[in-house]
Image 1 (tube, rainbow, N blue to C red):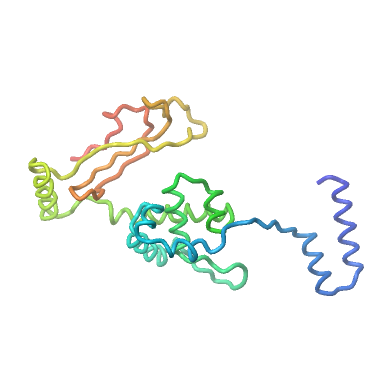
Image 2 (cartoon, rainbow, N blue to C red):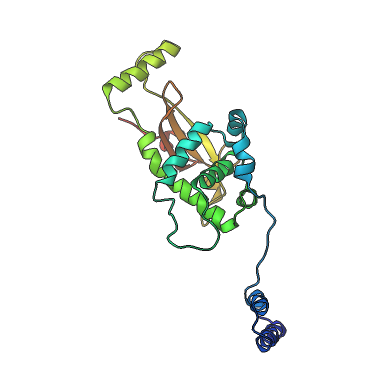
Length: 235
């Protein structure tokens, strides 16, 4: 700390301590020792705006149906990833719907943590914490949702649906890939990730049934790698 600034702070503290011990003086002392920064953010965005969206507007902004979002919120609220406070005081704990809606907005609108923190009236660090928490929750949940049908009866049903669409029998799923844009990882060679579009993403492989439901998702392989080497093989 600069010597002149240190001298000023110490003198200010001494002046406050020498004055009367009224509550106003205590508040002044607290402000000197622990200055606070006030940020202008949107207030009551969820209650005042999101809850008033029509179903069409909701899907337009969050890219999922309102019922799907409410299902995720109900699952998240009882999961260990949404830890309820054991102490009182401080800012009221945010409801689980704020966590999930912030995550969906962040993923659906190509925005930044700074922007969603301003929109949902929370700090940057806590927005980052919420996004990580909901991501971990969804990864855990996906194990019970994104999976191949276990029974022969379900497999036959999927095959019949595909045959009704295309006339091609014995199809269990359609496979394809896409790119997920990323920044080149630290301490990694950027050229390893550059694809034919001159961007540096990772590749995602997905398999869907006739109703567009994901049966499998695999990602993480650098896009420079040839398709024959990065495709997951099923037996």
